Image (spheres, rainbow, N blue to C red):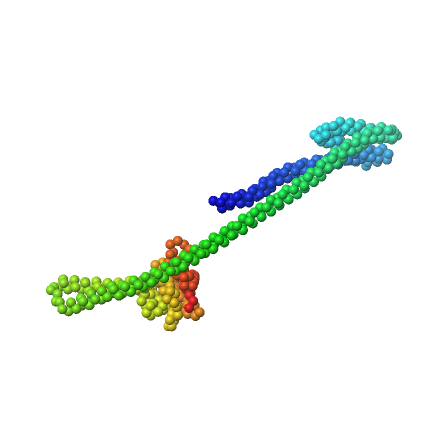
Length: 445
């Protein structure tokens, strides 16, 4: 119970900094977005004020250009000076109207100044138009006299003073906005630095706690892995022992069947043969029954022999592995009508008893699988003895499905792998081109 509580406590302290870091990142995101909106608004205000300054400058230049055009025409009489006169007047009026509309929404105090500028512009343009009209009527001296008066100078000076004052106030507002924008950028930098530093600290704490948790889990995993390996080794050893005990019990049962049951059946058959010589059967029915009894005893003897061979192949104990494998392959293929191709050495390999019976059982299982599943027409059994004994069972059937050993229900294939592992051997199964399956068993000599 204490371990469970301690593990829950550790997990909480691992997750708490992580959750704080996530919350900080989310909060930092919203703060950064708010600050970004603030600086974006300031940037728009700065751009707007810069645009106002440009418009004021353009208005000043347009007014001066209109005056220069009018004076050039009056002094020289050259009408080329008037080519841009009216467009400049129109531009000046449009610019002042644009400024009036702009300041109505932004700085309403400046609207009165601009309206005064507009009225002065109209008066100025009217005075200029009079001088031009006098020139066109041939009254050059009157036109020059009009230009030389102080009226135009007064209008122009008033316009300049008003626009310069507006420009100065706009510059002050622009500088104030720039200061706010710089302060906002500086504050954003401080906030980002603080957020980043705090996030780094939290992540470092999370990393330290996670590392400690990983080490603890690794230690637990290593301990569990060792325990699993120990239990696996015990189960493997127990299974190997059970296989060995099973083979010993099968051998003992085969000997008892051979010695006891075999002796009884042979004695019964011999006694019946002696009785048959001494007794004359009365009729054909008795003769038929006698033959049936003799056939039943003969079948029993044959059944006993097959059962003994299935329990423990006597050829393996008496003649060796190669002879037992040859007999098993010939029996299996003859029963199923398959062609058999043998490639075995003459000399018996040096194998232990457990290894020999393991190879025999594996080959027996492989031949059974070929007969049951492969739909083959030919089986090849080959043995090679060098540093290891290699046994190859190959068929030309439909082939084995992928991952057949790992699939459920393939206990025979799993048992083959286990038997080979128990004697230090290995199994490899591969497909044969164009079709078929090849299984190789290899064990050390």
